[in-house]
Image: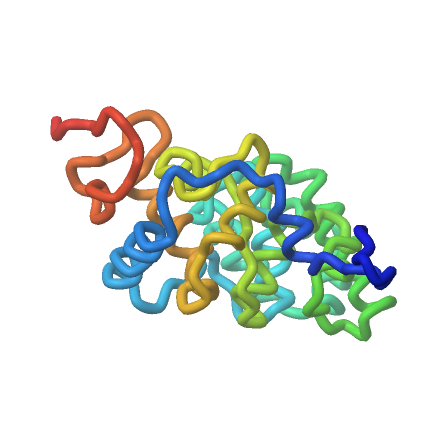
Amino acid sequence: MAESSKGSVKHTPPKERLYKNLPRPKLNRHQIGQIYAHLKTLNPDPKTELNYSNPYTLVVAVALSAQSTDVGVNKATKDLFAKADTPEKMVALGEDVVRNHINTIGLYRNKAKNVIKLSQMLIDDFNSVVPQDRDALVKLPGVGRKTANVVMNEAFGQPTMAVDTHIFRVANRTGMAPGKDPYIVELNLLRVTPDEYALGAHHWLILHGRYTCVARKPKCYNCAIAQICAYRPKTEAP
């Protein structure tokens, strides 16, 4: 903190402190706004591809999706959620039954333990209600910052940015929000994303990375934002 000549203390707003030393984007704000406008045209109302029926099943689904595909998680949770869509029902099933339902996805043993633990914590500490703030969500076993951001965005309509491998790749490759780790990319994206696109931005970027700006060979020849994106050289059509 710095003091003015009159001795009063100047307080830097929290967001400005967070954003101060972030890497500079390769695109200007107008170009970034154009990217979101194009992605919104393709998908005006983006949603997660995970199947869920309430905030609780969303928390479980997102926690299970770590190092697994959404398609794989949906197959594993179809019968599980039919039997247990509340913390009480999940605890009643028990860890062995949960494990048998999700044994087709990665790290299923540890994930089954966390599902039971987070369900019990929701019962004991939150009256079986999924909290809406990040600090509370990350206290749940198996729930990290990315999972909390997804739940806050999808279930509660908060403009968060859950940086997975897809968003990390798109943010760096396009030049929208460079960063060497997911947290830096998250802050950078929050800084440069126009307010009008803040709620859907997380989904647009994930879907773009999942289906177009793929890891090994981006489909630049079939990309709605190829003319704006800073990535070079563009991938030619096969």
